[in-house]
Length: 145
Image (cartoon, rainbow, N blue to C red; front, side, top):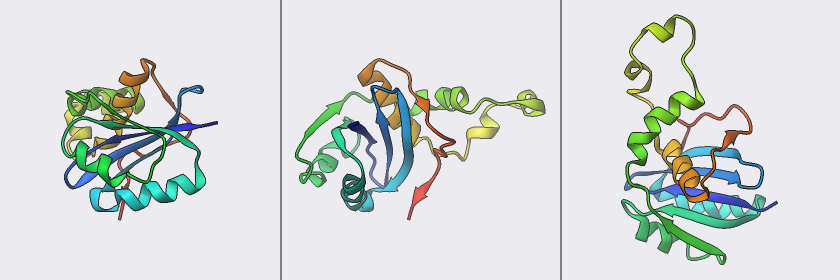
C-alpha cells in the first residue's frame, strides 16, 4: 500500500514520519540532518511506495520542496503552526510516564528530547484529521548521521 512521508523542515535538521493513512500507523520516525534529507528520501523511495509528501510550511519549507524535485508525485505544503509546542504533550501520549517517575515534573523527561519527528507526526495528523498509532517501538529521537 502507498505510504505518506511527512517532513517538519528545519535549518539544521528535519523530522520525518513515514506512515500509512489507511492503517493509521507510523512505520518510521526519524530526525535527519537537513544536508542529508535529499539522499535519505531518494533511498527511501527505492524501498517504499510513497504516494505523497507533506511538508510543514515553516522554516526552509520552500528549500526542502526544491530539494525534492525528483519526487514526481504530489507534494503538499501544510500548516505547522505550534507543532513543536504541541509535540511536548503528544510525546507523553505516545510514551506515558509510569511508576515513581509519575511524581516528578514532566519537563524533566522532555528537556533534552528532540521533538522534530513528533512535530512531523502532528502535521500528518492535522492533515489527515486522524490520530496515528505506532507500528512498533519507534524512537522519535534518532539522528541519522
